[in-house]
Image 1: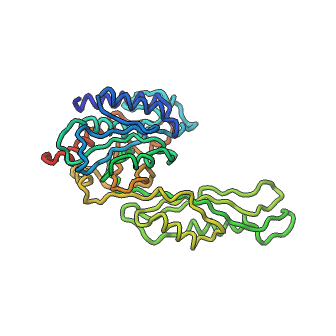
Image 2: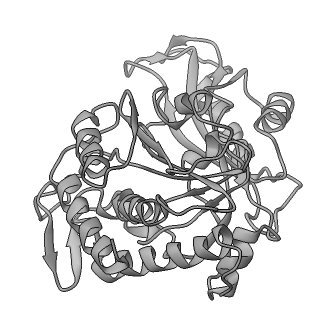
Image 3: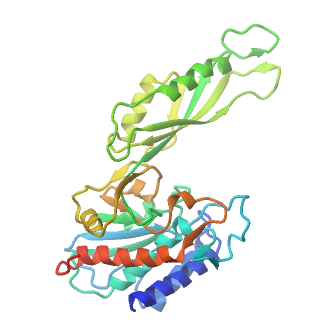
Length: 360
């Protein structure tokens, strides 16, 4: 197929995906929709639970492997929608619908790009395409479950809305559950050990604490208290206050380091991480993928949002059509021209990397 044919086929596919609810863990029908693309284009593919993946036709185990990945699950539509979230509507150059921007546009653009290169011979890299499930909830049956089943991945492009700019680093995430303990009592009696009052100093500590290492790309580690819960009745002082702390980690720390620092220094009685597997990720600025993007006029930046990059141990580049600020918003949309541009830029970028005889 020509690039033009692939572009319009990809847009049609995105409309079908929008029209099919695919909340995390419930992506079985969109997996079938994606499988139909591979069948139509005579591409051998495999399905593992709700993950769909394929290798290029002339896959050679002696070559390094580049993975193209994006997800086909969505969050739930919020109450602010004025348009039907599962009805694809094109209006004023915009394609509206849940998942259109995050990350349907990137998903179909990468799939079109993989299809374009599928039958090419003598590529410098093997290509693997993975449409992953359970990205939005960091589920156990998403990309992380696929990695042991795939050939070794040397580098990856993760499709997320970046306005086709080069996110060469991404912050990791740790969510902590913390407790501030005190002495329970009747509200009518004096109590010098009220955990709710003690919590004010703890909240101030979290607000003011600064980690020493500041990244040139991702900035400082960002720590935010997002939940405070205590007490069940008006006349009883509770025994403890429960806190939830969201920590966004730059590439200068491991999640284990952050955990050790906070356990030693945070003025909490308990501090327990829910998971340490969502690490920060990056790709060297000297990598040929990045340099090819720079040659195409793309800008470099660090992304504060989390994606499936967090489960990868190889260098990875976040890149895709759409705008992250539209993600999870009411009346989500992506511009049709953004999808067109995305496919063109993906193909130009990979042409430079995969076909060494061609320069930008």
